[in-house]
Image 1 (cartoon, rainbow over the protein chains, first blue to last red):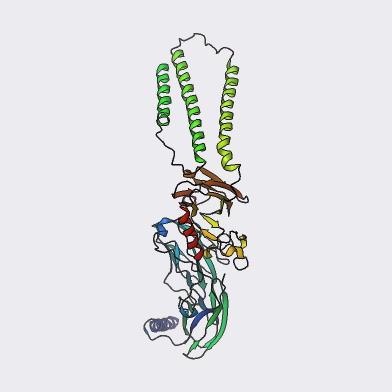
Image 2 (image 1 turned 30 degrees about the horizontal axis):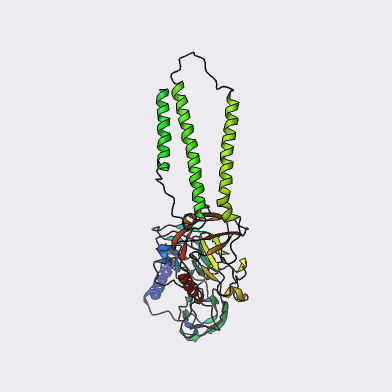
Length: 238
Length: 266
């Protein structure tokens, strides 16, 4: 009897996962919108990489710092938009999030991934890096990565957003956003985001920017509707 | 066997002196106004130490040669007056030598370290940190903004901790990873370390000065030749020490003015 029960529930699980992979998009609502700023954002300065010629020569004009990235129509990039309350925690996906050191910069500047999801940190430069993420709740470490070293694999087990720096190149700066569920997005310079497959319910959506701080909005989803919410950050000239 | 040792001693002494006498290892080019005095001092030291070295080795070889092959049982001869006179003599000789070098070298050293720069010297602030040098210029207003260590934000290129939001003098400060100076103009370098001890060394400038955390140090120099020279850290400062360097870029006054203008508009 028990065996049979197991068998049936196993089958049901199989069927459910088959639907999730191959079937139509799971029902649910979507929260989408745009992140913009008001005021005058600080002018980003070019990064002086003269001390690291192997990186400096990769650019025809020096790249700009990426603390504030903007686009047309006052849109704001590098903002993490995520469901901070209302959604259950999700299991980590099996694919790794990739963080690359290239041209003595971090690509992407902001990497969002889930709790316990694997992250792969690659060094594509002809110089050594020493990656040093600065979490407060998770365990802190720093690792040297000479050129040609295979990617470093790491995981974080607590929900937190923190800065990442390189102990060798002072200008290198990025961010890790370790999130609890799979409903998140990082805006490009167009500022748009879309959080899909949210079952009906009440959610708190948080938008985080590394120098303009955090904003939250509550939204209620019923059925498979798409709700639009926008975030406006106050830019600082300095 | 003893005579062979004497011959080997002579060979070693002469072979060591050869590259120095023939100037096999030349000093790097000197691009500073004070460097010639340091080069003179190095040459004097080499000459004086070289003569003492070769002389001492030859005397040693001579003694080894003359006392070699002593017969078993024959009495040992002592230097007249015993070892005491030899030791005192050595003290006086070496002491005089070191003192003389010190007194003569005072000129070269004091010119860089114990004098003030001329009133019109270009002031540049140098900050050493793991593992890079950053240089700050006062900008068009000629005034340095105040430093606030709590405002240091390297991801945002604020290496010195300036506060442009509240401090007007800081807004036009120029921060560069390269030390750009005009040729033939005196430069005063105001040095501080952000974290641990570092050192500023440009061999063509004949300057090597440590950065000491907590101390504001200053030195001055005039570069006389246009070009790009390496600035290296010569004080072991951590894992990236080998990679801690910057460039000294000596430009014509015209190019320097252009560079300053470019930097100001960024």
